[in-house]
Image (cartoon, rainbow, N blue to C red; front, side, top):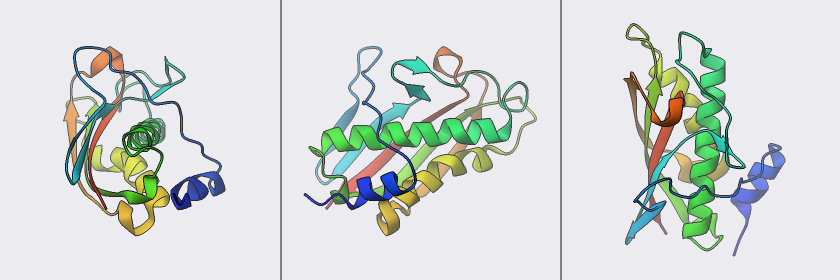
Length: 154
């Protein structure tokens, strides 16, 4: 197995967190060859929520971007597990992001850039993806951002 993805993360001062476990009756990922679907990831590190609140109210855009970046790291941790440690086989097709925000907040794409930029940094050209950024009034446990992903496995 090559470790180009892990090397790029290390060069950026990042390491993969331990993958989070499902909080209810679902799985962290599913495969339908050649696709890999990753369950929505929240900004959790070592089992602790790192960000809470409403973007545009008590969470700044920069904080929300950092939360989205952590969501993306958690996505990569799930992919790492799903592919038995071989992240170099993953090509990101799509990210879907949800931003808990005020009704008049319109910068959801800017927030989701935190996740998109991290995926591109980690996967290089295999990180180019389609994306959706949606505003919502509530997310699980009060987090400001949740991100899900679809990959193809090569």
